[in-house]
Amino acid sequence: MPAPQDDSLDIDLYDQPGHLIRRAQQIAVSIFHDALGRDVTPVQYAILRMLQERPGIDQVTLAQEVALDTSTAAEIAVRLEAKGWIVRELLPRRQRRLVLTPAGEEMLARLVPGVHELQARLFEGFEAQEQQDFMRLLRKFVHLNNEQSRAPLRRAVVDPAAGS
Image 1 (spheres, helix red, strand yellow):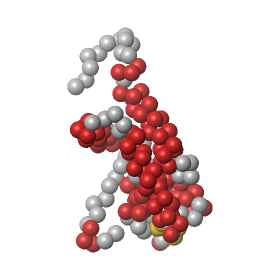
Image 2 (image 1 turned 60 degrees about the horizontal axis):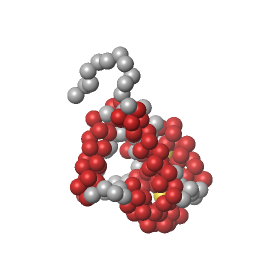
Image 3 (image 1 turned 90 degrees about the horizontal axis):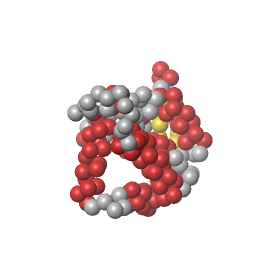
């Protein structure tokens, strides 16, 4: 429900969702690095996880699946390939197929304990129902505002019976 129009700026900064979302992102990234180290960034982790779930997807689809613009996804893919964690294979029409390497799989396996620590620390002080409510509302917020993003999420429907 939209707030009534008022020309004054008497809304407390900490009652403004945009500010709190920015702070939540700062906190999440800080805890991410504390729990998982600095070898991988949160966005690199998202790309590696998507490639683990959808091996061999093309770079454009990958960008859509993790809500990145294609040039950013391409730059990150180059960095991940330089680290030896993925392979980029050239396809017809200048597309690139991306696959995790064994080193990339090993990196993800090493991150598992840190991912669990990250989740626990992000929800420290939350009751189980509060965690569920927060995640439900956060997913709803992201879904309802997806088209406002510079790089909207585009999820492909994957038929598990058909494979990737």
